[in-house]
Length: 331
Image (cartoon, rainbow, N blue to C red; front, top):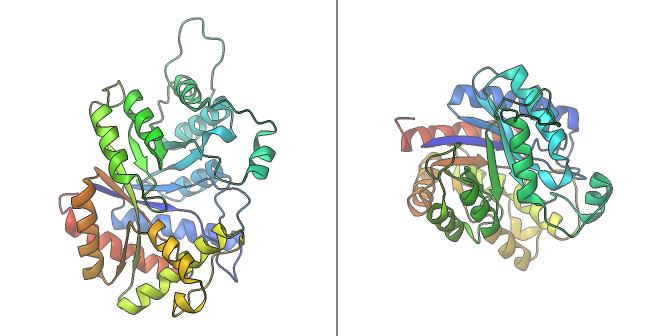
């Protein structure tokens, strides 16, 4: 079983986007040496605390700073873009960096509706996501006779495409198309178990994949001291509470007690959203992660963790890598 890293290029309070980008480069280089299989960045817009909005640009920057780790999107929100443009972007990335590029596709806009309108310029009620995925894959595949539209660079690169989701819709589509499926259980875990079962049960082998390949996303907040790990987690708890209450901002500094800065009802809601997480020392994180893997049986785990201090974030991922290497020693 492989383990990978999901980065949102967080912009902490007191910092800026340029520093966040440099921190992501440093983290990616560390991830490569720590044994992480992939390093994915996520598309979000109009978010003061996230520096990965131009996801393809960030992927190129990170890929240029590393040599072996796979770099990709987890994911590109396809409704925001024309499939041809994404095929050209990721085809260019693959042309430059070779077979190290992944393309995860999501159906949600990844932002509010006002921003979605600014991105797309026009909005329709029609859901064209399945057709857009097929169109994009066709651009990345070998050209057909008499084909008039071509992604250049892009065609023939066959960049691996993933379906991302947090509901049964994505599971059903990934199964139908015979594509790998990644579930966003690090912030929306409610349908995780059912989605994994729907995907595995309905999977149809394809030229891309012979059998189902399921990735589970989780958070890890690790430190050498258990109380410090709990403290580090409060940054992400606060960020979620602020986002859900319409108060966007940079990634908050941690606090000693989340109960001192948030209403109990919000704490309960955000803890439910972050329930697929492991928090504590290496031993504690290992026990919690082992239980999650045993329950959901993923083929791969992708680890996230919004932590305010870059050094503490790096240490958390170091501990996560140690734990995963111990759980899957043949990786």
